[in-house]
Length: 171
Image (tube, rainbow, N blue to C red; front, side, top):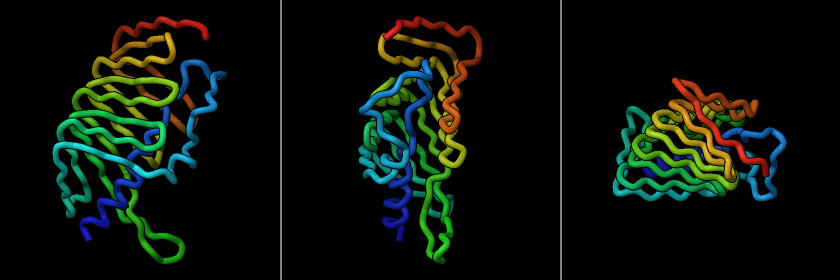
């Protein structure tokens, strides 16, 4: 039972799609759409993994490296909170309800690399928050600040928390 729960939770873990582009007009032929990415397997490696079945969470610790499609997340710790969701046909499945990465977080896609001290992602609202010494690199353009808030449904991004710096290089 526990292995089934973990496998199902992991299938939903890297819903972490790309952050909104610095320029709305940029597109990439290599970019994977969220629906295509949802059907792809998730590969996770870590030094250890622990499941807290009653709390419905899985915790990966030590050199965590999780990849789904063209999205990769690296950190020292990744916590996946999951819930049982009833389907219309009466069956149940496990869905990730929150992801929390801590310590040396790096999110890499075909378009950008985001680094920070921590990251939180809510798959239901598709909102990503990365905090602590955040750096967003897209091509040769670099944006830095204390906290990055991204709404992946609306492709809106906001850098907050003190001085924000940017170096924008046209492509």
